[in-house]
Image (cartoon, rainbow, N blue to C red):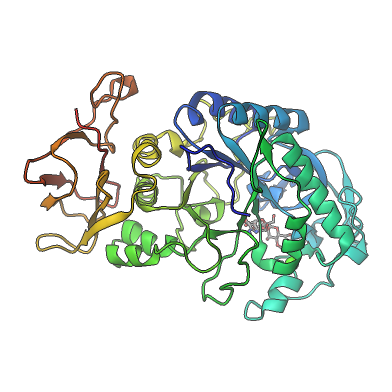
Length: 488
Ligand code: LM2
Ligand code: CA
């Protein structure tokens, strides 16, 4: 359940939310592969309900969470394009993970009086009689509709999320249908899945389905099993342990204190340090997500109105990338006027190409310092422990922190509005280092220069191990300072 299948020198996942398959294919070749990303998470790929408009918004993004057939057919592309994408990504050492939606099917409200609904590929279903021929489900394969009570686990798993028709995973027929869809993707070379709404399904049913999956083999190399990233939002800790041995924990907990520090300037850096004692309770493996389509729009826990309009998300991403020992999962989306807005599209409702990062595509994963910190993390500090944690030092504040990754890297974060000026003592060997938040070390040129002529700040660690740091305050925007270990 825990094998990401990534090549050894890679670990970072990027969620390219609603990127079309053809564009992801190019991104794997030109950016993700060379930049050492380990994997890409793709938004749901199964044919979904066609929502012409809702509340005045054309083609809202969330139609993808209402499946009605197993055909690979969405606005992102078709099966052939998907297959090609997986092949090219794998060739470039980037694994593909798919957001899998199988807790439910299209919601009841969409069928109106007749119950008839149609998907983006032309497949019909009837939400009234609960006939979903494209999924192979009839009324007998669903739970009876009921109002979900979030304080009762049985209700959370049995009842209806929004008004989405809830699937009964205890049935062999249902397990078979889901497993054969996932196995088809595994045959294409997919290395894992995000399990949407995992908390709303019984762990033993999920375990059974997992047991029916084939072994993943990428580029002819077998891995121990595909990774399941379980979306279990566990605010009060009552799901602790339930999903152990079912999959990897998709971590939301640390987003709360991190958001408080970076976005609100409240709380303190030591709360982040405390929340991040990996691994925690759900499983041995933790995927540390920095944001997703829900946190970006919702009030919990990030509530960003737009994609990194102010750099705060950048600070959060950088912190998790610099700090985590687990699998960082960053999010790359698009800006929007309405929280329902779908991805940038043209007049024929085709998704526009994100490759130039125009039209509203925000391409967070291509921003500095993202690229450089991914390198910092993957190339240098991946397995080095977080040490020498400091926050709230004499002339500092609770919104400033510094730590080292073993003797390999040193990171300083300033989430305060005040400038940080401090002399640290670090166990790194003396020398001149490159500040990876402003550029990166280029082995070819033996200097702190990145591509496009960006020169990073140089930082000196003196012979007594001290280093003087000056970092401007945030105006609630990011100011991150990272250094790698490669002295000039
Ligand atoms: C998830 N994880 O467990 C996704 O991360 C989240 O984005 C999904 O909700 C949710 N579970 C279901 O897969 C989104 C979106 C909802 C939207 C649903 C279904 O946040 O707003 O609900 O997808 O498309 C929409 C309407 C809602 C309506 C519902 C069902 O917004 O008003 O409820 O469809 O008809 C009556
Ligand atoms: Ca359920």
